[in-house]
Length: 383
Image (cartoon, rainbow, N blue to C red):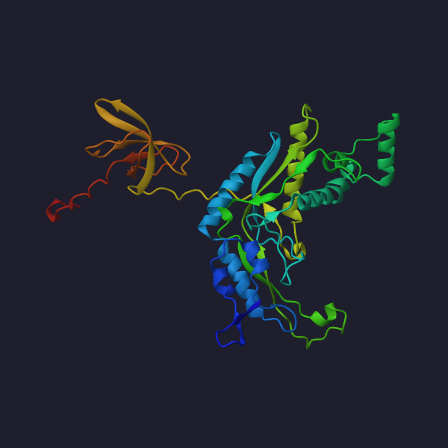
């Protein structure tokens, strides 16, 4: 975009708008990608540097502290508004994810971002479509699991006739119950998956694909070994998403929770095995339950430990404290060494020392014992 400014002398001069400077102060990645491209970045006359600069500005804008604070409030409000019968979990990307790669965009590649906050989101429609296809192609192909297959046109006609005129009841079809048909809605709602607030700062990543035969892809000429690959930059996503489904059937149904759990397990399987979004054949789009955190290292004798005081007991005129170290399986007792003049209160966080190395029966001390006195040469035992 260029603007013409009339000078005092009269003629028109061209001055480039300082979009690059304004982009560096951006707080909305989606707005930057749609409105802050100073000059063409694609096509024969496009400037690839402009595209890379715009992608970099979008990545940096996601790190803005004001955006992160606002998004955290919005995320908490959305999470609290989920229906009562809901199954949800935080799933982490196993690599990268890209949704909306082929959507309309001022660049060659698109990405699906939340309209208000400009951060990555996975549409519920995409999750439902993935789960429905996986249900039919994987769960429904096992012997004895025909109820998970997508109902055929004949099945739908028999079902509609049963609802209208009665008669012979058709066989159960779980696929219809979960996902519905063109005539009936399913009993499960698939919510948009929101990025968790702790993943915002590093959620957008600059990625690249390299088509080796662009002219052949256009249908112009056949591919040869002399074709020059043309790298195409795009944004992908890495982080943790809150994924959830809810019951949308009769409120008083006694199996509502069971059906919701079943649908959520189906969705988790499909995200782990197939992935969602674009480039899934290249490994993109996989989401899985994050692995449990690594256990803390084994304690060493007289090593420092940060603990929280959870109980005080006075025994034989001496104060003993029950303390809990973060990440340790069990609490322990602080009862060795010389205590300070001012003793802690319940709830205080203090630094103490390990008195043993048994994580299942931990013991702590106030201070490190003094080193043993060096032995004198004359006191060495005789042989």
